[in-house]
Length: 183
Image (cartoon, rainbow, N blue to C red; front, side, top):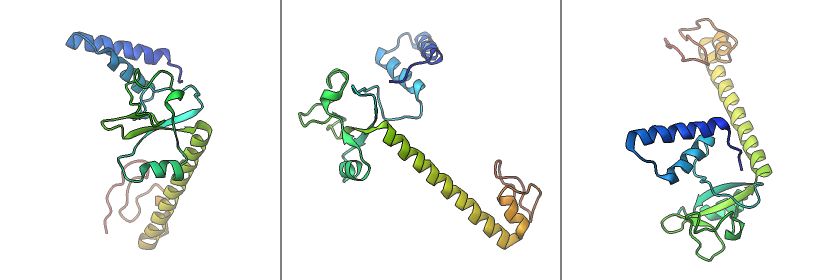
């Protein structure tokens, strides 16, 4: 469980106060949602569901998508969360327990809660980031080679970030917007 900072708690209090002034009351269930979103605004899809062993990353998968359960378990390494692993009961958490050993939510119970050890998940995420950075670097090198072939060596150096002058009508730098290209 992530420890809440004083800043986040204060932000939630300010939001509740502001909304209360504007509309008169706040649904208490919304306060938990806002609290969770302020704590981690980028992690969409995971509600405040906790399992007894906090060494796992949690993720909902949508089994309405054909092959999604197979892909998540066999190709990506996720395992299902059993209702006994939850902190609280499925009913108390607004979840479905169809008696099949899976934690479900959604209209037909098509979303299933899955888990993966945090150590494994973080290594996978780190490796994905490395691969994206490498691909972007390769793209930049290819772009620089194309610019060098078309406009000369200075243009290629410019694209690689080694030059800042105007070259062949190309102005600007890669951290800002690229100006015009006069051909």
